[in-house]
Length: 215
Image 1 (tube, rainbow, N blue to C red):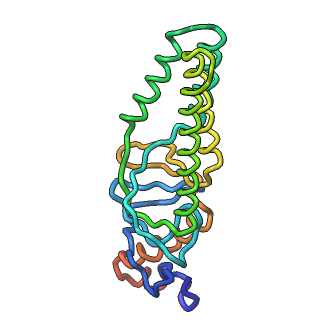
Image 2 (image 1 turned 90 degrees about the vertical axis):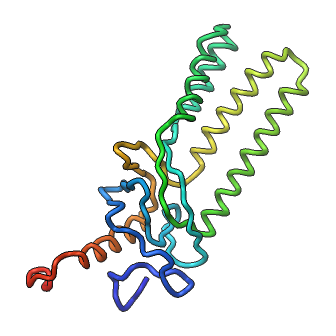
Image 3 (image 1 turned 135 degrees about the vertical axis):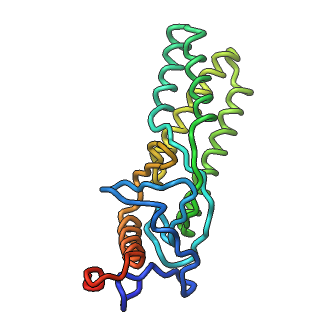
């Protein structure tokens, strides 16, 4: 943060802002961040609130996250197929869910991610890979019925996805409407920096009237 001017844009460790961002491409209301399609955010990590250190500029695809859907599908699959022996309905629900994931709305935004956030995301991706290999090994090498192995393995996979999403502290895209994504779970310090920077930049765009000069 610039101590001489508390309303200046946040500086990175490289001694200057790599990307000033577009103050009109996002807004903040309460604890939610609204991001328009193609938005360019300043150098603030949304996951950690960091504005210093090694930062990487990325173009990220923002899509609504399923939340507890993985948990509900896991219980539905285990109860429907494993217990009630309903061999049709649970599979239709799972197929419909993944069809929804594939065709869900999305927008793209230009934002920053800190080294800490990138390291954390890599750890989660490694965990997903290890779980996937474990589930595949279980389906192939377990000794009981192949269909039951597949049902049980898929149930574990769905539960693992839910737990990893629950453990992931990064922000969530809760919805997209009219080309605007609503983000929740953004780090409070990131919201503070974004709000301060946006206010400062928008004030520069106001016409220079005596009233505005006094503000």
